[in-house]
Length: 349
Image 1: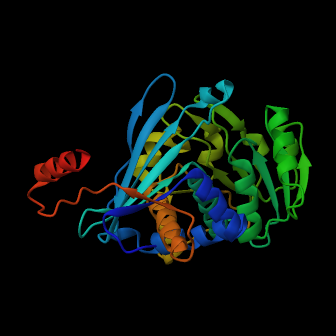
Image 2: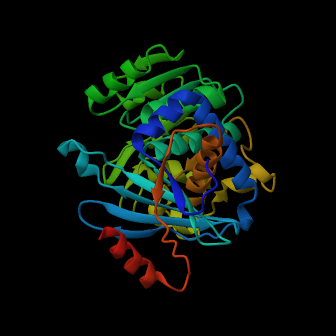
């Protein structure tokens, strides 16, 4: 990227698609996963706060900020399950990376696509450290906008070879199966969640309805399973039966946020959970044994978006898939912003 403090690189949806296709979808998610692992290993360095949320009866709008003391990043994201029925995206997002030293923005990007990539990458990181060794079969419950990314990330990073699909909307399952043709995965369309879980080592739930739901019931989950509960999260929305939580080893990103939004909102406020970053640093164990049920209660945290933006900034060093925006006022005298306005009026005639 050009070294011009007054021009901010902007990655549009079109350029994001082209950049990811240039790199390769699976390669991009593997790259983002590497940045997530790096940042999780330096977790204590980051500013951390639950996302700032504005809830309505239709959905939620959130800001997700963090900083490592060198860079500052935030994401704007919404979650509106009703949008799908209106032909709109359930989740949209954009994000910004800035220099802590100057406060100047250094990158602005769409993050609807980038969030899908980083969410799948995060699931793959959790699965890599928590699932049984040799896991090869994924059950994917919820076959909407996130599903293909989830399947391909686990294929690339965790050596998943087959995926069993279920969605209450059979058209979504057919869509997902069609999009995964030629991916190298064995794809099985299933009529029920129970059928999808047959023979699965890993199950990922990614539904979007804003309600207390039971996508996984207790009798469906056997010993040794790893669960990624990553569906769009908010207070009042769950996917997994409480009894499953009670017999699982639960791993989260940031407990103060997950207790508000995640599956564990169903549990007592002091129910013990483990933090995923500590598994990566070796401070705590991951899977205890082959029979344990492990649950990654993933709600999405700002550090993961920060990692994705860092990955994107570095990817642009060898790519021209961006535009430059004139976002920073730059008067000749920093004290004379009004004078800059007067000079522009003179130029306009």
